[in-house]
Length: 233
Image 1 (tube, one colour):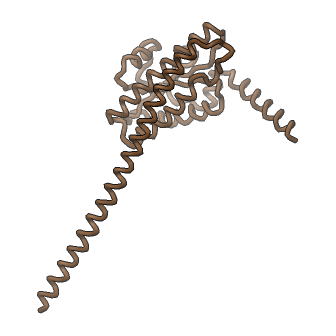
Image 2 (tube, rainbow, N blue to C red):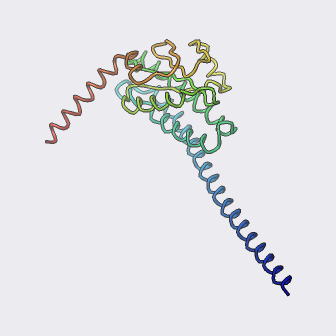
């Protein structure tokens, strides 16, 4: 009799364990499927943004100097793409083929923007400040993430700056050509400012020393802010 009771207990325990296991597996699968759907949605949005950006690029080439906002002509789309790409990379990993393909598209768009800025300079006499940032997320650059935060903050504070970020290890001919043109060594992070390469982590203060115009931009921002506050009082 006792043996039968023990057997029933074991069977009940097995059934409960099985239900918990398969229930957890079902919930996990649902979460995974939802995550995949979210990533696919982001990928689709990126594809649409790429098409829109390429179309805008073609339009801007034909625009007059009066209709071009030299601070944000093409960079807003690039910034949006960068954020989406970063999210996708965090979820799928930097080795994922889709992530690598998206990163290649993004790199090509950045080079297009760089060339567009050159054409705007020739046509309108406007030369924005550009920073090229070469990084690695292969685990061999401890300061790359910190440098990325600095540049993101810098871009938010100064819309006048155009920042282009390239994965040093990306297998893309355009990136290889950029590295060759500026002689970029595998000593990362690396910044190219005024056609000169700077290696190692650079703080906001370091960058301001290299680009003294930033102090003028900040002074102008403060003046505009004070004028706005005065008018609203």
